[in-house]
Length: 257
Image (cartoon, rainbow, N blue to C red; front, side, top):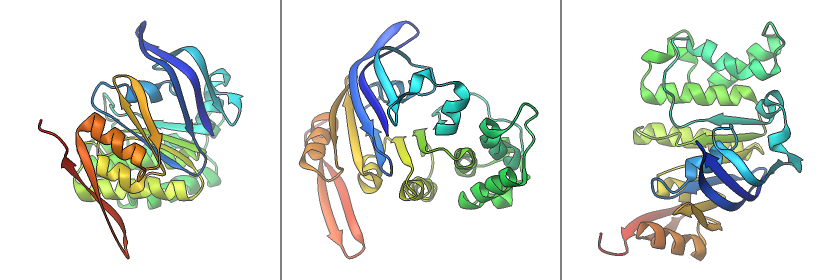
């Protein structure tokens, strides 16, 4: 379990979030939604050190997460950032192999077990056919699955991703969200920042709604609290439908824009 308690965060010396409390539970998928600039990315970047914790604490299974060594953190939590300035000119297999680095010695020599983990990660992300292709020439959807395979190969209990489906077409989005849902079903703690409200409602166990650099709601996706928060923050009402195959929603404007 990943726990934020009374956390304040700064970036570049500027205080951005104050007194944040949030819990991300084992075996649950939590999405964080909110308008641009509301603090979603700042919230999770405390986990990779880009956002600095100025007050409060972040614990992982009761231990002080921020006091752990970088190597220990990398074996507990994998983080996929939203923006990557450069795409490595590495083969997909080599890129995915980087997920094993936290477990390797000084010379980074992979064992048969490491190679098997990498192969299984590529298989799960359905990118085996691209193993020898350079990551920088792949389509956006395949490239994103390569980075997710890297996360899978890292084999952490907690998986965090910032906007993993941005700019992707509908089939690619569904495939990627299906991968994260499957990791949750294996007992992983999964935390996603998403802009797609309908996808968040579909896959989440809990939704955190942020606005104006505050958490305004933390609740189950189909709860009244979440529906009210989405209406207040985004100006959309949720219409729900259900059949033998599952539950669905449509967002309709609640007020004039």
